[in-house]
Length: 70
Image (tube, rainbow, N blue to C red):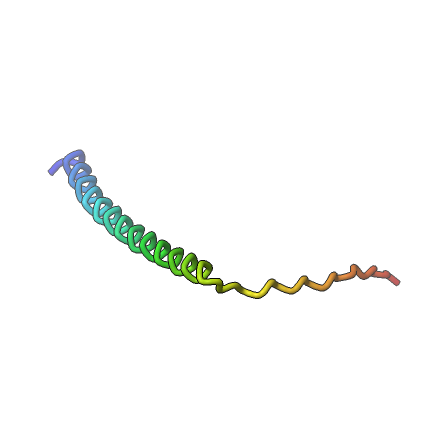
């Protein structure tokens, strides 16, 4: 096998691996989207039934201190 044929063979193998990787990413994306939609549905259900979280308390203001070099 000459150098160009070897290169073509490597590229064909790489394409197979990349296709498999893309399919895996697609499946992972679908699972993540499904989980997000279920989570959103649960949030909407709880909010529709009147469940609310308490308002966060305002953070205390932090005063800046002056650094005195001595």
